[in-house]
Length: 420
Ligand SMILES: Cc1cc2nc3c(=O)[nH]c(=O)nc-3n(C[C@H](O)[C@H](O)[C@H](O)COP(=O)(O)O)c2cc1C
Image 1 (cartoon, rainbow, N blue to C red):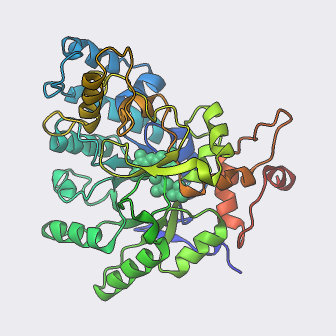
Image 2: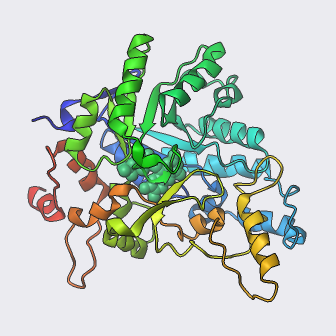
């Protein structure tokens, strides 16, 4: 029986352990987590979601305060179209986050940044172009285009000096999405260096409708692999979503993937950016505690733990401070839902908004607990402490478990200590 260690993921001249730790927005896939994946010879991701909030926390900047102060006069207005990002600050925050991470990189692996198209930031093209260029300037190894079809994203960085040397990849959930992407970019003569095929069991936003349960990752991977072969395109596929054990990963390689992208198992590691008490909520989750709902203003279904405090909360939209989901016209589905509830309950001191959530505020506060479908199995990956809590794992432990375990085997942390 094979383990993942019997395989290598080739990206250009790099020969990697075929494990990619996926991007997890608003600093859940922290620099520390990404750095561990790279040190161990795989690929780690940081994310540029709400990057100003991240650098305020990590590098003592005051970007959020500055934006809030600039637009304070607009807080009570429904019209957020004037609330724009300061492009200089956005570039500076991206630089700090990326340079600060890359300066600490050790080992033979790579560090990529997850860039979500759905972060439209009230100026979609300009902000995305700047986010990607600033990350390339700051020395990121690669960019993973996420949460969107990204039909125009390559063109936005076409003239960047690193456009052809940096690793650029895209996340898709169907052959159709990939075909559209390839068609739109054919003029640039620049293929993606890797394709993440994300199935319906993943965490975060899903590239499926509410009929997600009718799809399965292995079938989509096999379909895309067959298409690439037919077109004679040698682009490595990285399968993602629901891969919980080394055996699951090896199985995906059998369907035509060259590597796997995993995330949920790393949410309970010490290096993960979630607060420790929330990591315990992930450990405790049962299958019936996890749902896919439509409360994200992005319009994509999202999987989360039902007891996430952000669900049903009716906080006033915080676009003056954040505003990452404002579309090109300064609109966000949460603002409309919030205003509707306020109009319906004029006397209420605080309304409840069930159909949408203020994703910026709640992701910033770690109050939306997004997870993959397998989160209910996390409890089987650790042991209990004397007080009943679960022992947090090291990212190294989880990474090596994926790399070396066979079949459905899961190495518990004692085994890690014993073999050390
Ligand atoms: C907590 C959490 C946050 C996530 N945030 C993002 C994100 O910001 N952008 C993105 O492209 N994918 C995001 N994902 C998806 C992961 O990068 C990954 O592709 C997927 O979860 C892999 O499936 P698994 O969690 O079953 O291993 C997130 C996943 C989790 C668990």
